[in-house]
Length: 102
Image (cartoon, rainbow, N blue to C red; front, side):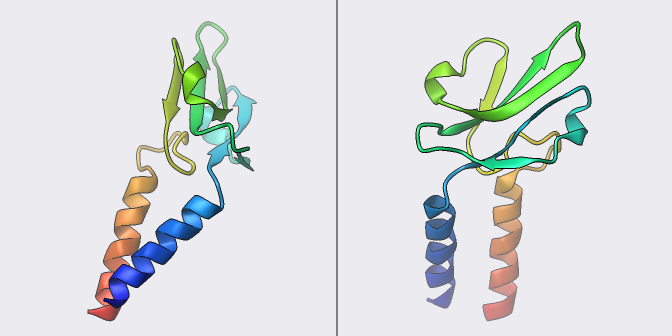
């Protein structure tokens, strides 16, 4: 029962704080470390690679504008260059809580 209360608390807090995305324009995707709290109208993070110029742009976006070469994703900081996303972190957090309380 405690696990479910903690899970609801974590999910509520993450929803209340809003979406966070990496934001930058850089030549190297791994150099993007700045984060930004997105405004309410933005519900996706995006990553746009500019071919020929070897540049990457990251930030917040509305799902209506996620078309073409723009790669959009849902979830906090999901537009990182790392392969492990926020879902991996949520699974690890859940496992740690289970180990502590069970």
